[in-house]
Amino acid sequence: MASAVLTFAISILLTAPAWAEPRKFPPACSERFVKEWTKERDAALRAPPKKPCTMQADTGIYVCDQNGCQRPW
Image (cartoon, rainbow, N blue to C red; front, top):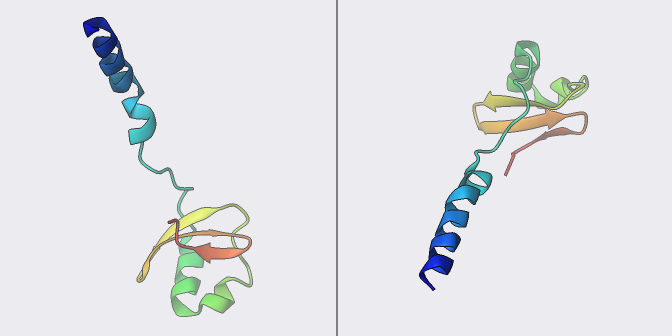
């Protein structure tokens, strides 16, 4: 019984990094895109980023791609 509990405890400790990893976001958006987004969102999305990118705007963090920008959660 004790060995089963010990084995279970060790397996929990070994798998902890798998579920404790922080979210990974795409690289940062270009300064040009962030400035355009801050001024006028619709104008910025006329030329969306080619690859997904992350930006910190006044209203929070966004992940942007060819389809627009969304909150990551």
